[in-house]
Length: 399
Image (cartoon, rainbow, N blue to C red):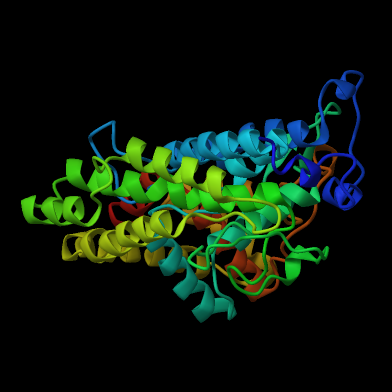
């Protein structure tokens, strides 16, 4: 029952040429014809540093000692699995779906959504812009993430339009119960807020829904293991959801099957009314009992201190043309932070340490501009893992 095969993002689709467009000409190699456009993107994404760091970034619970608590990389793997199942059953392009799925959370900061909110408050205060992980994900794959090419020079990832769109478009709730792609090809840099536009492809719509299917049950399962839910809480959710034993695999299976059975190109990707109500009940329960739980507040306050102190430590070294000099002097007190931030900046700004023969990527920051410099700090912090940001904070307070 490949109900969507006529609208899949393949060469016969009227959007195909726009979907596979890249911002720059793609460098070639003798064996390049072995891979499709979206398979190339998939490979670039899983080789990027941002993807590798997801294994040490919070999903909901910070630095769990239990290895079975979900981290950001496990969530991404679940989204890839669920979205592949849906796309395969419906007859959509599974290579595009997989590429969007593994890339959709590359812009997440350390400490999950709470870290995102803290960085957004810093960003609004310092440069007048909100920080949100979907837009940051687009920024990272367009401007920050670098891979070494066959000439041994660092280049931007240069992903296709369809994958880039899937990254910036994946946010948003689906309570309206009918998700269809937009027709127009827009400049993705014009996104001003999450969920401003529908995704460009059906495949991106699938990932957007799979994202929700993948986390609502997993977050609740983790909360049980972490003993954030007491017996009364567990009885409440079992009473609310009487269709199944409430665990993550059952929830994902139930919602995935229901979506596949009820969706069509004419009606869009949608659930039955019953399944949509189950999703809403679980989400409401999670917000009340997990995300807004008072027991989460101490870690949130801790995150705020860490991120702000690192930001201020680096911002205080701004001095126009002498900024790099001051940052290097900072190594006397904070060698790791100083040396690694200076090295990181050389990838994206014209500094005395940048050897142009090693790069073939965009210049992102003008370090003589204070706003640009603050943006660079925010980008740098957003790429840090939970463990690394904690390590840098300790270096600052224990020098």
